[in-house]
Image 1 (cartoon, helix red, strand yellow):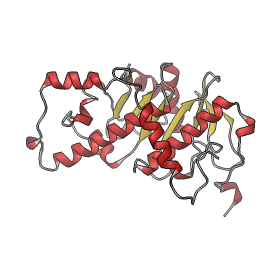
Image 2 (cartoon, rainbow, N blue to C red):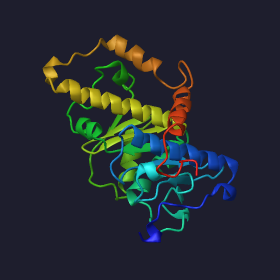
Image 3 (tube, rainbow, N blue to C red):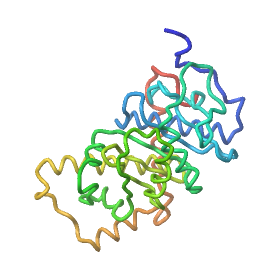
Image 4 (cartoon, rainbow, N blue to C red):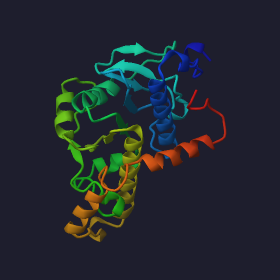
Length: 264
């Protein structure tokens, strides 16, 4: 193999501060968990996270690595406009769509620390349905009145689309990109991962249920849906996604080797 395309990278732990190193480990774990739960698309898609103490700086994956190959030291430091500030010594670069979609959301939403975008089979299927996401399960009910939609404009390489992406997302933390896929954002990596997991499960369940025909799908009462959606909003009952995150890290730590640990 050409060593310029190696997936082995020297550790950055001694070259960044403790807060950034923790963010790198958490983001690498998120990439591994997305792979673990079948929410990947070969080398495509992105998860970004703010770098603590570095305004306008994000961490993003190298374009060419599988999600299960990503480590804390392989992540790239970019600014909101996609300029590379620090990356491993490799011929891998970054995908323009990563900062076109993610950069504008981070810039417009100071409350957002992490953005996840996917092209899963179920997410793409629901994105192509006229009805969009239906609140037909408890899992899906959390998104009732709390999900945005953005019309398909082709591959996300046009900077002009950023304004429309931000406007369509508004104050929501979940969005369906019509005929494209899914997007979520959160105040932490843990929150964003939990939200994407739930959105993906809602989409998978909808695809399964609609196999019997839309006329066979039953919607809960509107008052029940509104109350259910409220109870699932961050801060309503407990810190959103944080309890689950520690369990997810234990899951990763227990997996056998084969790839460099995400903490490397």
